[in-house]
Length: 260
Ligand code: 0L1
Ligand code: MG
Image (cartoon, rainbow, N blue to C red):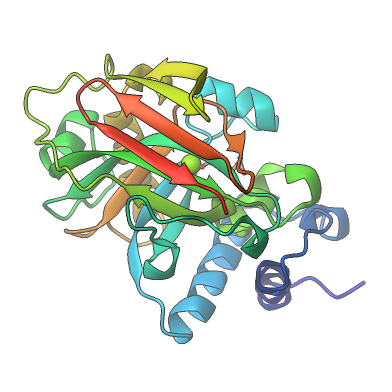
């Protein structure tokens, strides 16, 4: 059993990611791991990635919908980092064997036009900093066996971040009703779930405000040009080789992701 510190935990999570190997919850060996320390582990993990040449391109929110919270047994939203190495071009196939147990979820994504710095950011102020809105997919891949974790575990694991794709068509935020924006999720042409933007904390702008205010507690802000994944609208579906997961939104267009 290693001695769990911020550094050894970041190293272990990165080892699992690179080795495509899941493992036990960190909190099994470190039961009093608190949320503040878990975010420091997440930041230490990011430092290792940026030290290896990756750049931060945005922020993801996780567990912002009741469907996801119920499924994972965790009822508090969280944030994680997105880097350039996680970016998938629209239509780029995903080699499932590169990962541990990838799952895909549809998301509403924002590209930021202005800096957004908390505390005290409201949904309205958050929305005014958004340049464009996009259909998005996130591929999540927990470094814990069977996606079994407590909140500090998943925060330390960068919110299960793995890969993401956003649609090329940039829709201006004005005139969109994102609470009512609906999406249909299909696997190999069969509809498996539907949701509206209200699934994400009532409105995806609430998720963006939550991210800005949460980052402010760590002395950080959301920067212009960053991509924000506002959280899965539906439960995530497993990605299998040869299978295609598609999402069709009312106003934001469509996106597909194929496993190989
Ligand atoms: O993006 C998400 O909602 C995932 C956050 C982490 C929980 C999970 O692995 O499902
Ligand atoms: Mg997600």
